[in-house]
Length: 206
Ligand SMILES: *[C@@H]1O[C@H](CO)[C@@H](O)[C@H](O)[C@H]1NC(C)=O
Ligand SMILES: *[C@@H]1O[C@H](CO)[C@@H](O)[C@H](O)[C@H]1NC(C)=O
Ligand SMILES: *[C@@H]1O[C@H](CO)[C@@H](O)[C@H](O)[C@H]1NC(C)=O
Ligand SMILES: *[C@@H]1O[C@H](CO)[C@@H](O)[C@H](O)[C@H]1NC(C)=O
Image 1 (cartoon, rainbow, N blue to C red):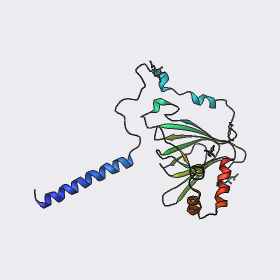
Image 2: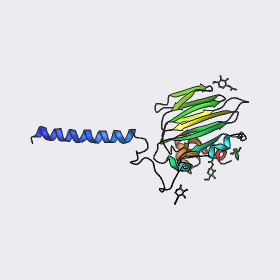
Image 3: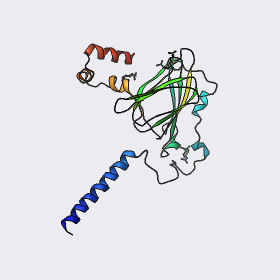
Image 4: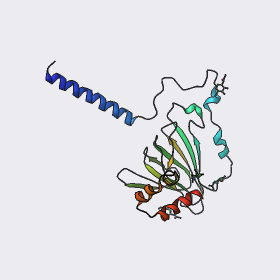
């Protein structure tokens, strides 16, 4: 093989590497090689049924923001199936603080009330919307986002679907200010005085 052949081989190898990286970067949960994941071979339909949401039927409305999750942690049958849910209850004036889901896009559907939602992309552009009952909004995977019921009287109820059996949540306030990051790093990162950072930290511990 001549020099041109070698160059071609190197280029081909480069392309293969590039495509493997792109594939990994765009993948969701890994595909499983079986119909589903079962703990043993005696399972029946009950294994594929989750009844934890029944508490919502006729239950008291919570007094603060509450997320009822149905991920593979609560519902093991979801393992390997790349989907999960959360029912979000927003009493009047409550907020689901700025957060990210590292492993999934979130598709929210507003069932009751109204909801201010938004996300910030990697260029720091804010996309915000005021949702009415029946509206659907999508929060792309891994981006900072929030939901806020700014109505002073009416509660809001939404259902969120996730493209992962374990989307994961990192709340920005607590992951930044309540994880014992060395204080000097926070002061410098936020160009803030120690006392200012301490005030924020104290608010989260209360
Ligand atoms: C099989 O798994 C199901 C679901 O986790 C469990 O309820 C059941 O007891 C298990 N059966 C046996 C024989 O281990
Ligand atoms: C949120 O509300 C629930 C039930 O309404 C209550 O058990 C819980 O203590 C509240 N949490 C906070 C932080 O107020
Ligand atoms: C809630 O937000 C919407 C949209 O920004 C605004 O039109 C409305 O006045 C707000 N309501 C309250 C009670 O703040
Ligand atoms: C902050 O961290 C402390 C100690 O780990 C914990 O007890 C507390 O619940 C955390 N606060 C919040 C708002 O997560």
